[in-house]
Image (cartoon, rainbow, N blue to C red; front, side, top):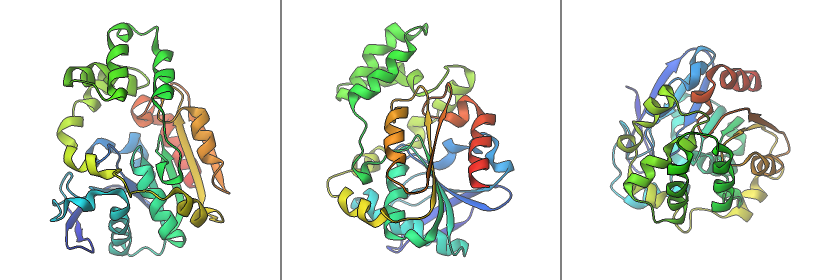
Length: 279
């Protein structure tokens, strides 16, 4: 598997899947190995996916300094990958918590980003957070599901910080547009693939300066796709719309019936949406 050296000397791995023009893909979690992205619902048939394992995850090495797990301190890892690939500018896709990393990268290296695809992505880097109330609003859309009654309270405890391991297990169905065999198989790898120590550091104090990031991106002319799931609370579709409004050239798409992993819920629709945007 290919690898490169980050500016601090940490060896970072990436995986290449598919064919076509490169699309750098940043995994969320936060700090989950890129394996959960798979081939992004078949998008690898349309683009060459370059799946980065963030430091301390997947096949990448653990850094000597754990403070480098902080989101803003990983920006130059992405830049080092661009240099490794020999690309003047990149198409960048970010899922979930990686939205913050992608936004900070774009703010620091705006001319290096040709397009940005934000898939159910966070935007704390721009001062937009997702509240517990928004999460629960989305959860209540699932009231007709057979697992809802037993899972709803557990889901609330996930976001108020009191959840047990059993609560996390019970709440997993809320993250998918439909809870079926494909979703269960996808969810099964989450714990093993996530570096919890790194996740605790990722968005720690000092990671974000929203005013500076907004100023840096105010005149940014790259095309941006903000893709939200109709049943996702992070972000709700209306919150995703507010994020899209922060960019001069943004397109908002709400994938019908999708949760937080839209390529699992409806691979064909996801692939067509992203491929059409990329052109």
